[in-house]
Length: 205
Figure 1: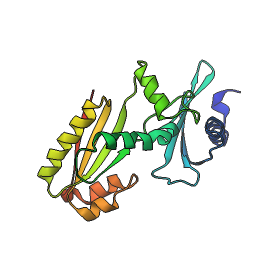
Figure 2: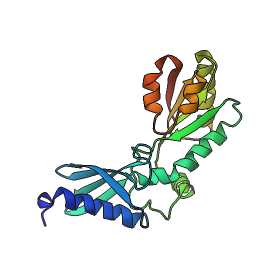
Figure 3: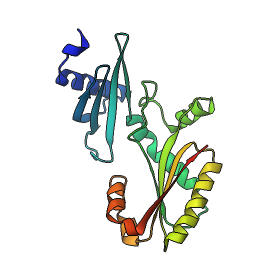
């Protein structure tokens, strides 16, 4: 059947079926579908999860009559291991900190399914395959001068570890704001507390 005659519902269900099969029965809740001439994009989230923190984007691209899929869910599977590794690298820097890996823009093809993990991805990278990550380290400091000082230390430590990608360090001078920050609300808290937050960013390696 010609792709242009497919309904939104059939494309949505096809992509959901693909995700379910790829990730061993994991269910996803659809939010919105964007259709294009050659690419359809489904926005969804892990069923039972956080629509903000566990949101997933899945693409279906038609190439020479064949359908090719990619999605961001594998980035959710590996993010806690990546975050733990970043915190371990920075463990000698004695200030309160959290780490959040961006999982909304890192697409993975069918090779990366529920049988793979972060160790597999690291080995794949070590074999010469390119992959970059985005991570934000959130720190609690007394003043923004210390924020800049510790941000430089954190970025240097992560760089020396061989990490490749974007490193953000979000310095927060208000302890109450720091205590409230989560994976889902950090952008909103930055907007609401500009006087007590500052983001330092650098692309490394």
